[in-house]
Length: 320
Image 1: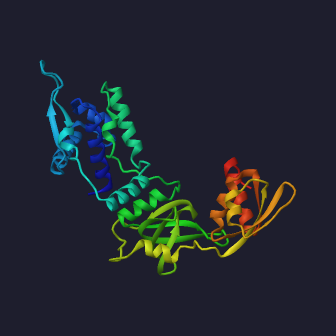
Image 2: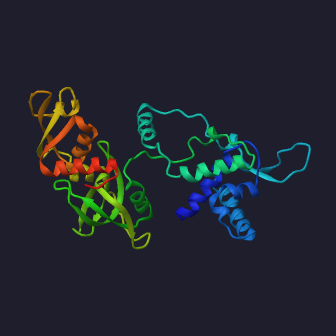
Image 3: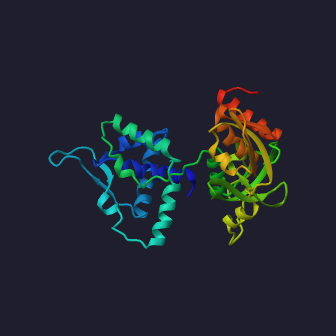
């Protein structure tokens, strides 16, 4: 099933679950973006009839009926919540631990935009949505990296990508070509694992170091994922997380507590203290230092200073 069709069916189910009333075809067409884009009534009718059957084949209890017990009005549709809801379940402690981890990962909706617009259109059509019924319907992932969604899409579609990548040691940008196999969260950071075409080897790329847009290359289905590959083991072996250099920073007295805890040497001064901090990734340390604002200043190495300055200018919306 294509991604476009999957999104359309999901939007249809969200629309039918969003209210306890029966929703007319006209209301459904206005609420679901893919239906609203149909140029003719016939095209919509054919698409909607096919989708209804597919929804029912998936086991989703789609009902037809009227909102009035006394008068005949337009036929409408809805999902029977009682039949759709899962029965009460119990889990073992280890299963609950896994579910707890998953619940912390799935937070920010990839399809939140279309779903929200559908609810707004339903309200405009006079249908009062019951948004509590949508809990658990929409997959959600919380991540601040702009590269996450396009690379996730490429993994799903098995499609190669091209992007600019900032080197951990020097901060220099270089274009990379990747056949992505999977995305892994490791020690609070997101990584893409795949085949690096430029180096003809398995590589791991931290998504926070992807700079600029991610461009899809080739056709869907071209990337072949190796059998029985352990993505987390690949990240553990290849990710550059271990301290390999030392940075010198100046922190205002009482500021930079996390940096002080990691510092191997601290030289007190008048109002400011000089810290020697081990680090493994210039960009990650630069992000942390920039987060302290004027309370922490990067002194050395030069690439760390440049990375901090770049972030501070980005906050101002200017270039250095």
